[in-house]
Each structure stands twice: as structure tokens, then as C-alpha cells.
Length: 105
Length: 144
Image (cartoon, rainbow over all chains, first blue to last red; front, side, top):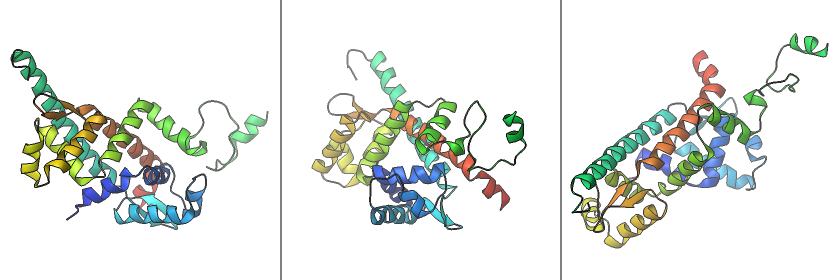
């Protein structure tokens, strides 16, 4: 029952995989170029790329890995909402704390 | 002298940099390119680090649900166990992890609420990445 968001967040949670994703963001490149400068083995990089691909974060265009362009705005919308809700909740807590100082809420 | 000559040559993205001033992003090392864009957007290295930290935590779907609920209202273990159907031990384990990382803060009586700051850092981090893709992939996307 893992949603698309779960897949994307799971893919970006692993530090090495996130680094690989960042490298594709910085410059679309071939798998062989992606391996350069990384401490992990080529099969490990291939596996991480496969997970990123399955999550819909990257795809291959003209032999090079590129970011799927609509995934970042979608992810940004999720964190906008999380941030807004937490900000409103935080405001609420501060307000209640000031109002009901004795209750210490 | 040589500068005049260089300036009339067609520019290639892979060519060596000969002029002064700010280096072109395509000629920077990966980390420096990301830093340069972050700098232009006034996003600090600390904020990027905090964003990466929250992303690492959110790979676990149950932890994500706990954080989402705590963003809406203060929650405790039993409230979240009732909402998600997960075991109390699983929930309290997630809460401890989130609290240790500073993603949630205690209210009182075992209730916690989400700190908006880490989510804000991820917004900024995604802005940096999005700006980077606009730079590296924008032209191709517009040309299609």
C-alpha cells in the first residue's frame, strides 16, 4: 500500500542514493560518469539508480540520466503543506501557552 | 591581448575558463555548483544539512505519518496508535527518533508537536535543486 510519495521519500532517505540524485540534478550524466568520484561500487550505484528510477525521480534521456522535472514541485508542495501546518500548530501552542500560563500547555 | 582573442571564440560548456569573475556553474565541481546556487538563494549549509537530516528520517512511512499528525495538532502515543492502528511501542519508538532529531518538540503530558523549521529547510533545499534543474534541464524541456 506504499503510495507514490512513500516511494519518493524512501528513495531520498538513503544518504548515498540522495547524493546520486543530487549529482543528476546538478548535471544530467551517464551512469559511467555518475560512478566517478563516488566511494561506492558500480553495482551499488546501479542499484540506487534503479530505486530512483522506480520512484519516478530520474529517467534516461539520450543515454543520460535526468531528473523527472515534475517530481520536485510535487515534493515541494508536500513540504509546503507540512511546514504551514506545523507553523500554524506552533503558533497555536505559543498562543495557548501565553493565554493559559498556569496550565503550562 | 589574449583576452580579446578568447572572447571571440565560440563558448563551449566544457572549455577552460580564461576570464576573471564568477565561474560559470557548468565549470564548477558538483559540490561547488550546489553551494553556488544555495548561496544565490540565501540558503545556508546548515539549512541544507537539516533538510537532509529530515529526509533521512522520512524514509520510514510510519515516522512520516507521525510527523504529519503532529504538524496538525499535538499528539501522544495512544492518540497516534488509535489513528494509525500501529502498536504503541512502534509509535513511541518513532516519536523518540523524531524528538532526538529535533523534528518534534514536547508540549506536556507526553504530547508532542512538529517543529516547522526542518520542513522549511527541506522547502529551501528543494528550491536549490529545482533552480539547479531549471538551469541544467530547462532549455531542453522548453525546446520539446
